[in-house]
Image (cartoon, one colour):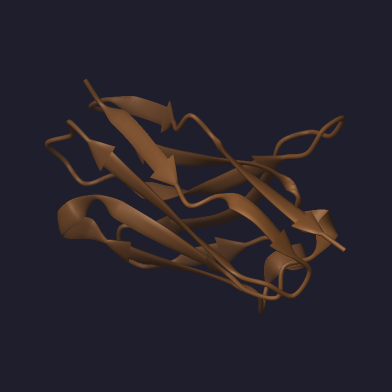
Length: 117
């Protein structure tokens, strides 16, 4: 029933910006938290940022000061503004939503972010 739809990835040069979006549909309750993980080729999936329904955020050290997450609880939607992108940011970005205990944890389909030098 619950689906996460994410978009906004693309190809940019170093120093450029992208804005990702993720919307959770089919949930009758607000997610406890939403955010993004990313996975680069040959590397483990890692936390980028999460935000709780109360607005508490947790950012990976590598993106602090460059990425900003925002939310609209009424729409169960989050956005990730990615500025001053670096080649090291290249990865597939996966949206996630924690809707326990009613629905569980869900993942989006992933969106590719590629940053060229």
